Length: 275
Image (cartoon, rainbow, N blue to C red; front, side, top):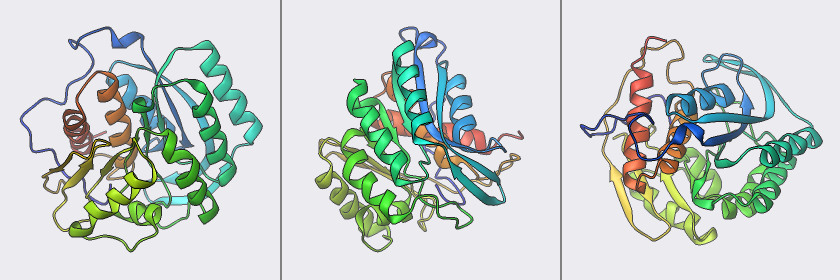
């Protein structure tokens, strides 16, 4: 989401699962992403977000990394067969209510995840894709072959995608957009993958506002302001946490705009934490 995150301009408490309708403590959410040993991003950040919203979290690791908030030193994708077994066993044993997808690492992993979603029977509107293509320190995390597979096979089975402006440009094949071009590029994604909801995070824009284009064509901007991070992880992992929180709010039953606002507020809360 960029060096800073756009704060939700809302007086609502971002909230957790307690006190909300239903019994979300029994719901299981799956994260498919890379492992960050510093726990600021990736699998562990996703699982913590799920837990904080009252869900049981399970995971399938796509790659091991050597990284901290200062940058990524190395990436090693897992064997495709191991990932396949992990996903199949989790889906067979547990009632997965939603999926968050993060760093995938290579084209083979992209294809495997797309195949899994195609046969798993998970509601598309509860599949959130955070297209992690490059680390904030500039390390490539998915090559062009992988990006092309993501466009062709993964976007059509995801219900939501949450790119920053650089990732949006990579997905559309167009120049990195300014605010005026964000809307048109989001429509390009929607034209290529019918039924997809797009949230473009605005941390790299002059005014850090986020933009949402729903599959129905309804659109909205979410005004924000810059927030200086106080926690030990800094801004590291804000994109992971936003997409995970968005999934939580969708599974809890929030309407799209409400889910985006609550996810933004959750990231702001994390940025202001001392841990």
